[in-house]
Amino acid sequence: MATVKVERTDDGYQATNDRGARVAIGDSSDVEGAFTPVELLLAALGGCEIVTVEPLTAQRGHRMVRLAATVSADKVATSRLGTITISYEVELPEGDDKAAEVLAKVAKRVHDSYCTVGNALKEPMKVEQIVST
Image 1 (cartoon, rainbow, N blue to C red):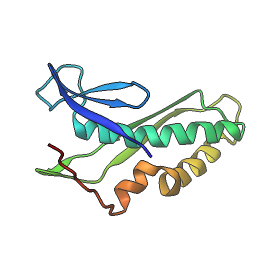
Image 2 (image 1 turned 45 degrees about the horizontal axis):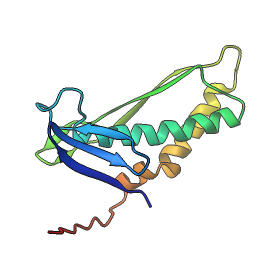
Image 3 (image 1 turned 180 degrees about the horizontal axis):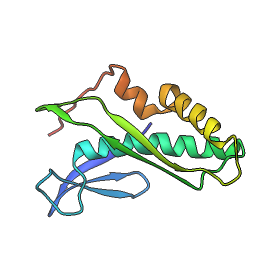
């Protein structure tokens, strides 16, 4: 089970995980250095793909010199995003003729099947709310 606590602080909001990591949250005009909730969603998707793709390509003997992803989406309505696009930025290892092919196959499998965040965004999921007073 994954659990994150989100709470109001003196200078905005923050999310904390069970390991003590913290992320500042705000809206687009809010606290400097904070992520908006939509930015966190995009970061979660990009992070899920990258942390899955990188070790799988390395296990196959093709460690990329540089592997990054930019994740973007337009807001198409007040509370709706349009298509989310993940663009990989890669520097292949010099002299490794198979690295690009392995990366493409692994990235496709991760995107299509293995990224939990991506799968959650593609399939309708039940989200429940409990308000405790």
